[in-house]
Structures are given as structure tokens and as C-alpha cells.
Length: 207
Ligand SMILES: CC(C)(COP(=O)(O)OP(=O)(O)OC[C@H]1O[C@@H](n2cnc3c(N)ncnc32)[C@H](O)[C@@H]1OP(=O)(O)O)[C@@H](O)C(=O)NCCC(=O)NCCS
Image (cartoon, rainbow, N blue to C red; front, side, top):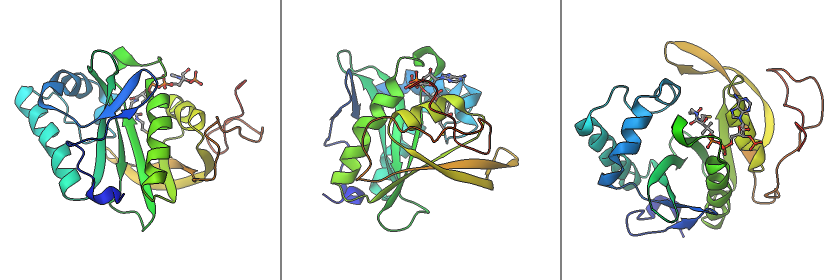
């Protein structure tokens, strides 16, 4: 399987323990509208703020174009029973070297705190490794504690702090680099306990 040529709209549908990962569809507009109203999502993604239905549909079409262009594989995280879209998780290939892929995700506030993102990530990683990815990378702002929990809960390892790594909004921001390799266990990663602050891994937090 070559991930850069996968046709997401023809499948696959990945099982994520109560959720599925599938291609975005036109009727996922309500999810995009909810994300568009959430500044914590629009500041770090391509979802436009204050979108109307037209802008939401345009964003969904952009996701399909990104697959065709080989930029990445954006999946909707959907309820396994109702198929309602609850969030997004994606693999991105642009700007990263051969054999590597970057992971990104968001879930609007109404669906947070139910483990949706962690389960989506746990389903996505083995599929990406089967598709030949040799290293998954994840960049998380130091203050984004929910995302640190998600990353570590899905077996990603904290590697270090990248200072002024990326422009977010109008400012250069530090990013914590996480990675997961095919040989890493799928179980939650436990940091070596040390000072809990923005420049070092969060301790195991009781896990
Ligand atoms: C990050 C995000 C995707 C998490 O989504 P979610 O579906 O709520 O995630 P989950 O329910 O799988 O896990 C959330 C974890 O964070 C913890 N958490 C949530 N808010 C927290 C906070 N303010 N402080 C500390 N921990 C927090 C939860 O307890 C849970 O941890 P646990 O699994 O160890 O119990 C969501 O908050 C979001 O979309 N944020 C805005 C966009 C974003 O930041 N994307 C990631 C960019 S790197």
C-alpha cells in the first residue's frame, strides 16, 4: 500500500473502537461549522473562522483535493453507529522527509473528553505503519495539555522542545516534538519523571 496514492473516498474505513475513520463527505458540514466557531481549532488548522455553509463545503472539497495532490490523508472521525462526524485526524506528508508523516487532529468542544481523539490516533498509527511510514511526528504547543495527553496516551514519545519552531497566528511558537515508531508499543508512553514544566516531558500523571 502506498499511502500517497490511497483513494480515501473509495475506502478505507478504519475501526477506532466505537468510532470509524473515513473520508469527509458533503454532509459533514455541521462538524466544520462547529470547528469554525472554535478559535482553539481555527488558530492551528486550515478551518476558516466564522465559516458559512458555502465555506464549510469548500473546506471539505479542499480535503479531497489534498488527497489527490498527495499532500495528506485527512480523515473524519465518525461515530461507528450513527456515522456522524465528530472530529478530524490526518496524516500529512508535505514538508517532511521520505518515510515520515506528520499527524494532526481536532475535535470541537461538544465532543471532547470522551477519548475520541486518542482512539482515532491509536487506529491511525498501525495503519500508517502498514502503509510504509517509518516515523510519525506530532508537534504540540507546550500549553496544550489535552493534546499532550492524547499523544502520550497513543504511545507517542516526547523528544524535545523545538524553540520558535512555527508561526501560529502572528507569533513564533515553541513546539514539543513527539514521535512514534513502528517498534514502539501502542500502550501509553510514560515519561521519565522529572520537573513538570513546559521544557520537559509531563510526568506519567498517574497512568
Ligand atoms: C486536543 C484535542 C484534539 C483533544 O480532543 P479530545 O477528543 O478531548 O481528546 P481525548 O478525549 O482523547 O483525550 C483528552 C485528554 O486530555 C485530558 N485533558 C483535556 N483537557 C485538559 C486540560 N485542560 N488539562 C489537562 N488535561 C486535559 C483529558 O483528561 C484526556 O486525558 P486522558 O486520556 O489521559 O484522560 C481537542 O482538545 C482539540 O481539538 N483542541 C483544539 C485543536 C488542537 O489543539 N489540536 C491539536 C494540535 S497539536
